[in-house]
Amino acid sequence: MLVYVAQLNPKIGDLRLNTDKIINAIDRARIEKADIVLFPEAAICGYPPEDLLLYDNFVNKIEDELQRVIEASKDLFIVIGTIRKNNKKTGKPLSNSAAVIFDKKLLGYKDKTLLPTYDVFIEKRYFQPGLEQKVFEYKGKKIGVLICEDVWAHGDNTISKYEIDPVLEMEKLKPDLLLNLSASPYCFEKKDVRKQIFSKVAKTLKCPQIMCNQVGANDQLVFDGHSMYFDKEGQLITIAKGFVEDHMLIDLEKPMPTFTYIEEPIKDLYEALVLGVKDYFRKLNLSKACIGLSGGIDSALVLCIAQDALGPHNVLALNMPSRYSSLSSLEDSHLLADTLRIELLDIPIDHMYQQYLDLLSPIFAGKSFDTAEENLQARIRGMILMAVSNKLGHIVLSTGNKSEMAMGYVTLYGDMCGGLGVLNDVSKSLVYKLSKWVNRKKEIIPNKIIKKAPSAELKADQKDQDTLPKYEIVDQVIDGYVEDHLSIEEIVKKYNLELETVKELVERIHLAEYKRRQGPPGIRVSKKAFSKGRFLPIVQGWIKD
Image 1 (cartoon, rainbow, N blue to C red):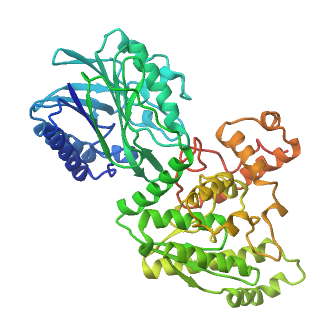
Image 2 (tube, one colour):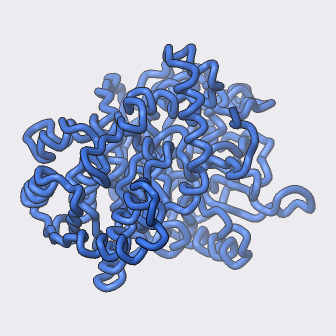
Image 3 (cartoon, helix red, strand yellow):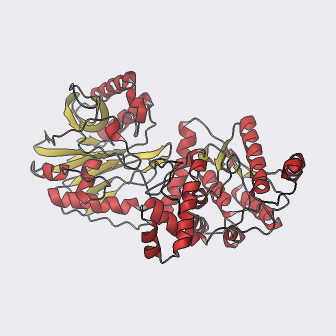
């Protein structure tokens, strides 16, 4: 029996386009003489559709497109993720389902049982859980169907502790094959976690398991693909490519050697960021980006990502030096832009800065130089970037990283301006690792940029560490407090840090909440980003000491 696994990249809400892709995959599977075709979760509408599901005409159109899939299914057994109406008089109005089709007939649905409502997931807002586990007979085999989260509880890797385990219920039905439809978003080092979970499921069920995962970026979420096939012993047999559309043709009767892949988390992280930028632009029918290139490591890395995502001809860099910008920053910016073949415009801002200082001098008189004067420079640069964006149609890519966003070490209406925050969820420590990965074969980002001390260059001889601990410490606190939800005392113990240092950094995280609310959407690549999936009040009294 041949199974064709169609790892597709949908555009949320473009139902006709998505269904055309699905039908093309069905036609290719037929050419390959496949018996079964497996698609990802919510393949027709794309995942997550969010509040588009509140519109009846949207759900009606999904049902219409499903009929197109049914008509295209001649001689094939197809399992595809869809959204359907819950016809019961109680509960939520919809079900997140797998439609099971054979030879132009709808055999039935398997409704998703476990509805994740944590982190980036809000499925209980829309869906009624399906309580029944099912197998479908095909060619003398019992084929079990589960959807994404339905298997994750078996690995005990979810925040929610569910009362039931669909895998154990499926075990009672003794399936010969398990098909899993997934829309599992990427986060750093997640591929290995998936392998552990799905391997355990295959061992429990004592049957082969195939997981088809969505690929592509939708808003802030990146889906990495990496669809997987496990044998009944739980050994990984093959894995689809990551971060691109791909397919696998699996012969269930043919013995195959186990598959070993080399875990390359930094490579995966870089590819996730590139895909995040690429799909954000492509799916919004945009093509050109504009970046403020400062000579620092963050903007240098963003320029590399943008070049790989959009092509050098679609990226414009602006260097906007003030009186505090170093000559080496200017030289490094030009060297990087030349290496990447990206146009770089020099737009000095010091005369504008002086005009603002003169204008504000009656108000600022008698007061010492502080962040007001520093932020003026960042806001002048932000104004220029947005003017270029408006005039030329280039979308500004913000360059602030997660560590800076955490500490409020970014300027509202200055370096926070833009349409997409590329590094919003990438810590400073990872920025350095990514930059070194970019240079793994040859020097692309000038080594001087990587080696020099971080500085906003908004006053004379400024260094980030003038007002912050080392970024290694900052990132440990962010990991502990934001990603792992540890208390201050637990962070002190885990990382052997000073209590007052941790308290100060945690307080900074809370004080900067209002800034982050006003920033551009950022690409989520960690297990807990500041944007999607994190809900904290701006005004609170919990952190007050």
